[in-house]
Length: 155
Ligand code: TYC
Image 1 (cartoon, helix red, strand yellow):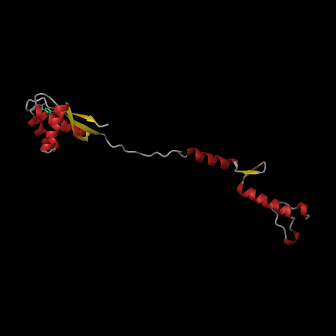
Image 2 (tube, helix red, strand yellow; image 1 turned 90 degrees about the vertical axis):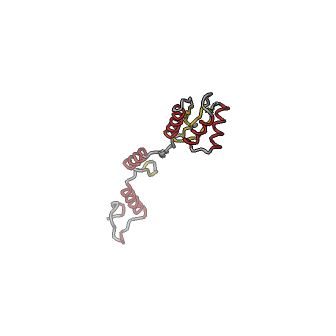
Image 3 (cartoon, rainbow, N blue to C red; image 1 turned 60 degrees about the horizontal axis):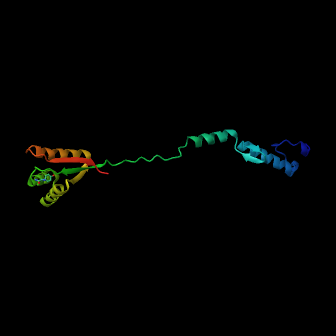
């Protein structure tokens, strides 16, 4: 078989090996078969099926990470409100009993409310603050006093 009739891919006996250009052609055919790439203007680009699967992979991949954050519940202030009728000593007793304050702490809070109109007693979780405010207010009403404790969320 003359060299110019050799089919690409044909295994030739040693002595009848085709020229270098034929070898190059066969080599290129094997590469093309293996990778099934599309040749465009000399550049090798992935086949359309490869491009499609790569695209769908990228399109379904989330680009942002979702970080779950747990926010702590806001604390609520218990506020003592001044009035003109509740005896000072009684206010101090209620503050010590309901808010576990010392004599000195309770007296300071009572005097601050008396002078300024109100004073923050303490901060708690919402339900605890509301329960304590209600119990302390009830302690005053049970004795006929208008003593008032309110609550409000902290900033
Ligand atoms: N102002 C009251 C008085 O002079 C005492 C008082 C202090 C009452 C604070 C309430 O939140 C209060 N007897």
